[in-house]
Length: 315
Image (cartoon, rainbow, N blue to C red):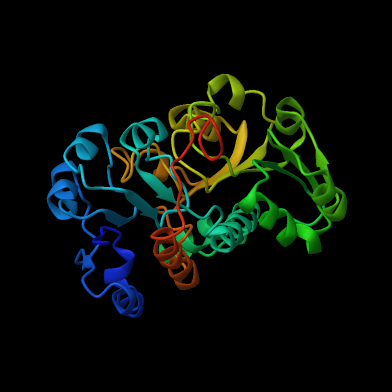
């Protein structure tokens, strides 16, 4: 018998989706609200259930050891960097997951970020709220060289959105898609080429051992002088302290981030810089994306497999 616990707060936020999961699983236990759940909370809530429809709650070694009945983690999340495939395989726990589930929402936000920082829109808004009337002189996105680091599900949607802007599009990824690149006028490049040539650089990498701290101070110094940096992927990929220094001295003209190493951040100094646009990890914050993520969790109840460490989406 399938006993389902729902720890993802999406279902409490969307009664229609809660009703949908209960129409198929009447006894599903759904968490109320969107509270942050610590290990003890997860253990207490999920105990006795063999399937969990999960968000990004901690399913650590301690949690799994205390949930011997658990057989399936059905993910509503776009990424799975919060899960350890080694642990899941050791415990024989299957994972349900759909890659790119929020790709439209995040790609639209990346495009929004590009235009905003190129035109200084956010700074104009802040100034006007303070009673200051001034016209900024920005740059067009049209005709710029845009680099995409990570051209997977989301990166490809960014490429599609850029088509009307007549940009030179560079893509750097471990696995390239020559057919897609040819169809959309994308030039595959190395990391060094990406960093040296991009006027605007948008990051769409997963967070794993190969990308954590990738954009260190040394790498940030390889970026084209005066470039614009966008990150809607994951925190801990970019060294935030090093980024702040380069925003202050102009080596990087402006940056826009939706993700941070610690969320919520333990310091807001970076957010005080006038050439830095920050949002609170809202890349998937579109109703359509929430519905798609909830649907992915429901599908994962029955469509799942034991993950293999070292293979996509794990490094």
